[in-house]
Amino acid sequence: MINDSILIVVDMLHDFIDGSLACANADNAVDNTLEFIKKTRKDDLPVFFIRDHHPADHSSFKEHGGIWPSHCVAGTHGGEIDERLQPYVEEDLVFDKGCDKAVEQYSGFDGRNSAGQSLGEVAGMLEPKDVYVCGIATEYCVRNTCEDLMKAGFNVVLLGDCLAYVDEKGHREALEAMRSEGITVR
Image 1: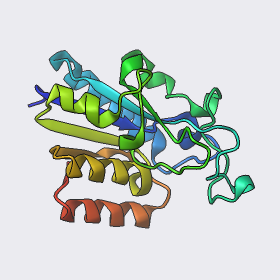
Image 2: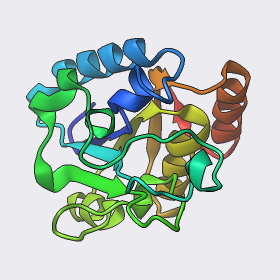
Image 3: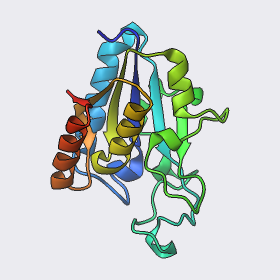
């Protein structure tokens, strides 16, 4: 089932789990993602990580005219991938987004790895049958990443028990919208 597939973990970062922008269900989402990885790792499931990676003066921060509290600043604890997932992190499969202080980026498709490659480029090279997606937050970065994956022609499977969200109503609405767009919610 998992052969020829990849997993994309979106923004499972400390600030979204227990920090400045802590989201509902975040600990459960990380634990369930870890279980999914452990169950599927024997099939050599590549695990991609998307990481919000902002400069301290990012335009999305309230103090700089944006709508969000300061979060996921590059080089801070809040901007790092949760320790529980660290054993599965490979540097060339970490894609940073939001690095330009003037640009808001929700989609992991906007991220680049340390070699300058985009998520779409690297995922496309692997030609996965299915792209499993999980992460934080359903209504924003997860939804935008899933939609961009769909637009690029990938078969997207969203892991419903591996999600955290800003607002439960927004979470439910985003799930319904993604289903209607052809994204499988499992």
